[in-house]
Image (spheres, chains in turn green, red):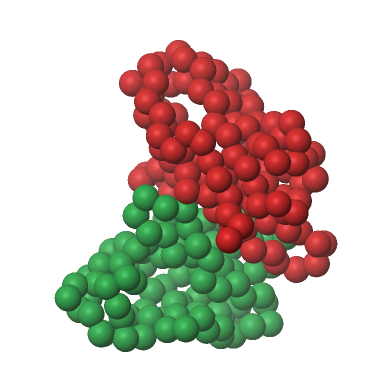
Length: 111
Length: 116
């Protein structure tokens, strides 16, 4: 069964600090991996999409890495801001449309 | 600023009642998805359409859920009869699949459904 596991489930850090969120998956065949940010009460918003051949991709202060051999991905947030408080969801695709979602990491940035 | 819209944003209903949720995808997008999100299960794909044709509804309880796209600007998700376990946030997302590689999905704000 295709699965996406995220860790930690929740994380609290101080504003200005860096953090890294983890995603392990067993989805096969693999097409692409996405990271979404979901603010409370809103729909998810895409941060990055990485295909098999991509090892890293950045979007501002967000940098995602992918190791397709070990089936692991990470999302690194640099110099965190209060607005980074949200849930971060890792999503793995078998094809153009089929998606398997992780349950997310709930991140809280404290001033 | 194009975005996916969903109505209603909130719905409280009694068990056994029919619920209809509506979604207007971004103009020009050819793929529409329905998702359900709960604390326990996270996000789950219920069904999706390409060019208005249903491609996959395996995630949907067939006996009570139905999804349709009467035209390119409207997707509906209907629950009849509703049950308390259907309480969740239902998201619609749309995207443009041009046949190659991954394509972005843009999510609407969701409909928060409470069935009492």
